[in-house]
Length: 318
Length: 259
Image (cartoon, rainbow over all chains, first blue to last red):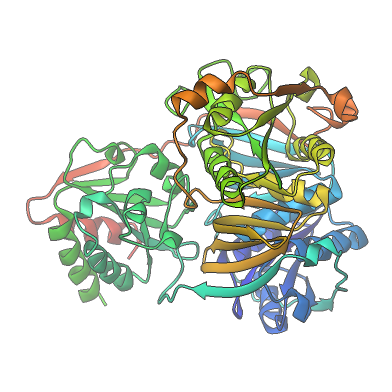
C-alpha cells in the first residue's frame, strides 16, 4: 500500500494537522510519501522525514506561492498518476478541502471527509466518521483507488520518529483555468502562540463571559497553558472575538487534548466542533447548561472568579 | 448576467435526524426545508442582480421531487426560476457522482457565475463547489465573506484560518460564500404568492445526458459499511464552586497529566 500525504504549510512550517496525518499514515504501514506545494518550501519539506515520510515530493515554484487550491490539484493529480498512490490523505483545512474535492473530480476518486480515524484491514481502508452532530459513528470506505480522505483537525498526534526523507522535485504544469484565480492581497491576523488547529490546549469563551473584555482573562489562561483561545459563534457574531477563532458547525472542528469551555452553554452548533476533544472542562454558572451533559469535569460557578485563580495556580506550577 | 445558485433540501434544523440502517443513508422522509447556508448564496445572487439592474437568478438542485418545496422558498426570496435534477437513479450519489450531475446541468445553463452556500447542514459537506469548478474547468473562490462582481471579474474577501485573502478571478467563475457575507431577506407575502407560478423545471438523468451508471450509488466511489453509537465520554465529574474550584480543576488536570 502506498500513501501520499498532502503537507500543508503556513510560512516556513508544515501545519501540525498534516504532520499528524503523516504520522497516522506511517502507522498504517506501507510506503508513505509527503508532498509540499508552494514557493520556497524546500526547508519545510525536509523536516517531514522526521514524521515518517520516506520521500517528500516538492513542487517549488513562484506560481504556487498563493494558498489557492486549483494549481495544487494540477500538481497532485500528475503526481498521483505518475506514482500510482493507493491513498491520498489530507488534514482538513479550508485549502485542503477544496484541493481534495477538486482532485476527487479530476481523478474520479472517492473522497471521504471529516474522518476522525482510519484503520487498515488488509488492502482495505476503513474510515471513521462522526455524523449527524456526532450522534452516530459511520464506518466508510472506498470502492477504488486512489482513496482520498480529509481528517478532522487534531485527530492524530504528530509523532516525530527521527527519520529523514528523500526530497524529490516534482514538475509543475498548470492548467489554464487553474491559474485564473489570483491572490491580490492578504490580511493576516497577528497571533502569538499556537493556532486553534495546532493547539494541544484550547480555552474557549461564550456569552457567559458577560462582556468582550472577558477574553483578556482567557488569553492569560491560554498563555499559561501554552494554548489558544477559541470562541462560540454567538460571541464572534457579536464582535467580541475574531472569526478565525470560531469553533462549531460554522467555523472549525477541533480536537485538542484539553478543551476548557468558559461561559459556554454547549448548544449543538458548538458541540459538534469540539466534542472530539480529549478532556473537556466546563465552567458555567448555569447548572442546567447542556455542556454539563458532555464534559468530563463540570464546574458550576462564575468564570470571572474561577479563571483568574486558575491562571495563577497554573503559573505557580511553572 | 446569469447567476446559478446551487441549493439543497435538508431536514429541518429542529427535526430528529436518523440514518436508515438498511440503506445507510440519511432518512429524508421528515420535515425538510432549504439548507440555511444556501439562503446566503441566494441572497448574494439577488443583491448582484439588483445592483447591476439586470440578470437572471436560476436555482439548481438535485434531490427528490419534494425538493421543489425548498426551492420555492428561494423563489419567494426573489430567484427567477428553479431547475431540479431528479431521478431515482440519483439516490446515494457521493461527491464524484453529485458533482458530475450538477456540472452537466450547469454546462447546459452556461451561467456567468455559479454560487454555493458554505456547507450542507445535513452532511456537513463543504467541498462540492471545488469538484464542480474542476468539472466545469472554471476558477474557484470559496469562503467568500465579501463579494463584488463587475468588469467581468469577481473580487472576493476569503476567510481562512489565518485571516483574509483577497482573491480576483475572471468570469465565468464558481464562488462559495460564507454565512458571514450577508443576512438573507425574508420572503415577502408577494414573493411567496408569486413563487408557485415561477418556472420550475425537473430534469432526469436522460435529459442531462448522464448515464445512470455514472450517477447514484453506481457512479459513486465511496461507500458506507456500518453505523455504531459514538464512544461514550464516561462519567462527568461535577463540582459546585465554593471558592476552591480553581484548585480542584488544577488537581484534576494534574492527575491526568494535562498540566
